[in-house]
Image 1 (cartoon, rainbow, N blue to C red):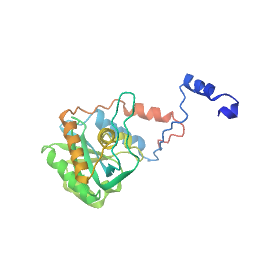
Image 2: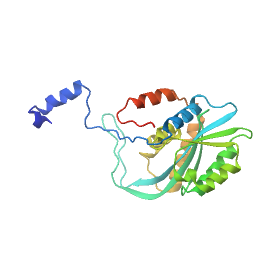
Image 3: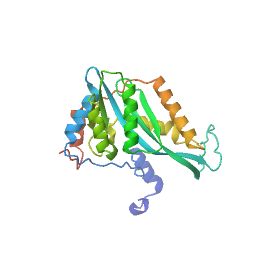
Image 4: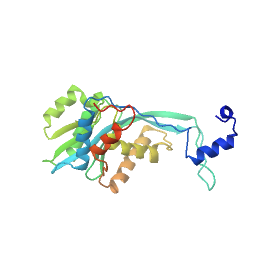
Length: 242
């Protein structure tokens, strides 16, 4: 740009700083073309903000292909004035999948680690959540549109468990699923800089993270109403809320 407008690099830098411009940074996004987008937003947000009485609301998803990565060389620790270091190259020691259900009412998480993420594993996880929730409570489950969650065998399981009600988020709207925030925190605090020499070690770290999380869990608080969200999206270019 400096060359194009015949200014020095420092002048361009000062202009960008003055206007708080960061042209090197970018965020990706994807519009949902779900024909029932607005209705699903209202349904899911309503569960977060005004959950039904005598019911449990859980946000469910799976984080698949979590890699047990070991570094080829030891990194240097963080020091005053210096970054910690980590080698770019790594060794792969296998993967695991974490199924998780975040209880919106108290913030606790039920998690199960499995080698695959097919409908069979998903049903096993649903059974684990079923056992964890006291009898007599209706279970409202918020899920995305992954094929595993809509498999015929899963639908058969749902028919056999009448206290369960599935609520699907709109397509391309994972931000409506509260458990995604839990996955993000897990990645940032334990996985991104972790060094794991085996899947067992990786799964042990995930298990400890869930235990630590549940020890200080707080209710999940959703602050923006469905009306506020939909109104904001209507004012964005090219938004489609049909």
